[in-house]
Length: 178
Image (cartoon, rainbow, N blue to C red; front, side, top):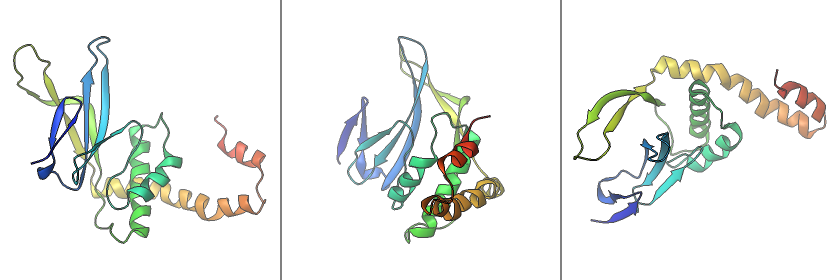
């Protein structure tokens, strides 16, 4: 059995799948603020990759991270993040021969407690948050709401920019906040 050390936890690598995302929260003992985290655990060697903004795991992860780099925003809402995730997964499935099957999306609902795990005396209570799996219809709705527009930007607008048909002022008018 092989163990790795991170954040005061040992990860037993023999029982892990190839890669898995782990999300959670900690209470800051100085400010009492809840701090959320997501890590990707690489089951092949047990290394843990902390994710501070976005990340991907699996054979298409390099493609996904390239797309996420331009689609991620630090103020993204959960609904927007779902749309981005579904779009990115669809794009990766279209180009990576090792990706496929039904798209599955789940949302970790941070403010909902399903259960409180017992802990030894003088340790914080562990709260287990609810995970909501999106239905196939919700995933299709998310994909349909952005795919056509994002595809138009990628396939038509970028070419017009490269040919000089659309100048910076036109792009700024399209992207300005109202």
